[in-house]
Amino acid sequence: MKIKGILPALVTPLNSDETINVPVLNKLIHDLSEQGADGFYIGGATGEGLALRPGERKVLAEAAIAAADKNTPCIIQVASTVFSDAVDLAKHAEKAGAAAISATAPLFFSYDEDDVYSYYKTLAASVHIPLMVYYSPAANFRISADFARRLFEIDNVTAIKWTSTDFYQMLRLKDITNGEINILNGFDEMLLSGLSAGADGGIGSTYNYQLRHIRGVYDSFAKNEMQKAAEFQTKVNRVVSAFSGEPVIPFSKAVLECMGYAVGNAAFPMKRYSEEEKKRIFERVRPCLPQI
Image 1 (cartoon, rainbow, N blue to C red):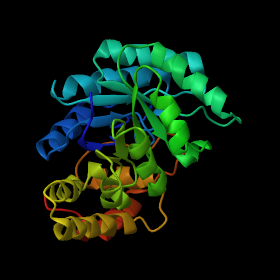
Image 2 (cartoon, rainbow, N blue to C red):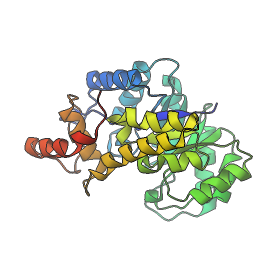
Image 3 (tube, one colour):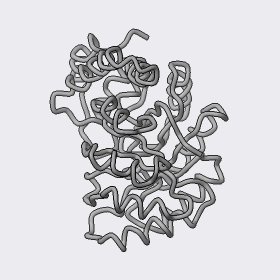
């Protein structure tokens, strides 16, 4: 299975006690599907998976898969600081109907390539669905094209979420796997660059509230309308520039709140905005958003 297109890294709507707000989750998935989402990435960095209790992560996975159309793939991010929890979440995701699981490299401690290889090999063996490696330098482990190719040789490892600006390595990875590895670009502001370097689509945070711009980049590129794709990428980047140093998850939640989605605050201890601060954020970003 090759996953292509535009997949929002879904924001996780939370109640005040940090349980999943399922009705708002359902509405967000429905609306993004109507706007052209090709799938959803659930419980990743934007989705705060690592900050949520394992039981809530299971509720999130089940609810998201149930809300999405049966032909719309949901990729469930299962990494945890406790490996047995990651395996448990992976098995649960498969049972719930996930198209694939995904995981960052193991976190915080120092690991070498053999350690990380064993981690992905064991995690992949725990399920019968594809595993998408989640590469982000924020996980404090660098994945080169050569190491990614080694991971690609593991049964079930079919894809990588490439949240890196190193497009040289992405190009090499496509080349040394004969174009077979499934790559999803991770940085919203570099979607066009990632597609040009061989990515099959994109997964991103701002897709939650500017999907039409993102869709424009992808669709224009697919039609070889490069000038139009660049114009859409410029629109995407205006939204990204409106962050002005604000933390991505609280910022995104503030924007969605002002758009009428009661997604709540980010999980403690992430920044929490007052209602006035949310309004100021939205006034800053609103002129850059697509008309919905």
